[in-house]
Length: 140
Ligand code: RTP
Ligand code: MG
Image (cartoon, rainbow, N blue to C red; front, side):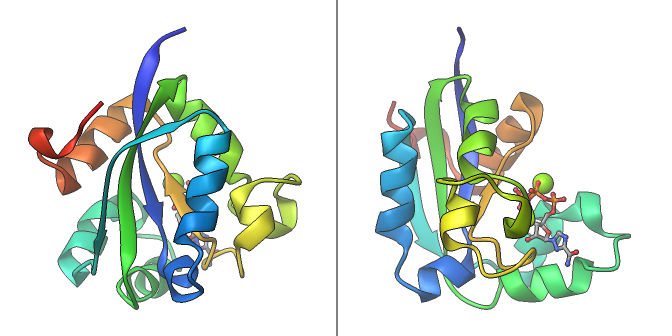
């Protein structure tokens, strides 16, 4: 199996409740390695660029407001099949549909305030990692 990298965000609902360490424990227990991490406050422009794929959706304005409402922790995760594996570890977008033991089942407050983001493809992972990290900030 291929060693991949994926991009992760611990969202403002989770940093507000001091859940960074608890979420990192779920990530590491799943065998994913955190090879880059920083706590930032996303600007409106950064959030709009990051979620540009959703700009026509009715929830876009709320989503940008939410993502800029407090600190986030942006991360690069590395491991076998990291993109698909992290999507599995996060669970379904709506926590009501998320499987037991997943980050969103354990911690999410709502379909919007759902504690974590993970890239949905290896191509998107590359684009998302490049938006927030330079090469020398990632230590594999
Ligand atoms: P993400 O991109 O954050 O990893 O989440 P995802 O793939 O599971 O879900 P996606 O469809 O890409 O939606 C992006 C984020 O937008 C918020 N959302 N709100 N109010 C709503 O109906 C709604 N639907 C989605 C969530 O924060 C979701 O993770
Ligand atoms: Mg998505």
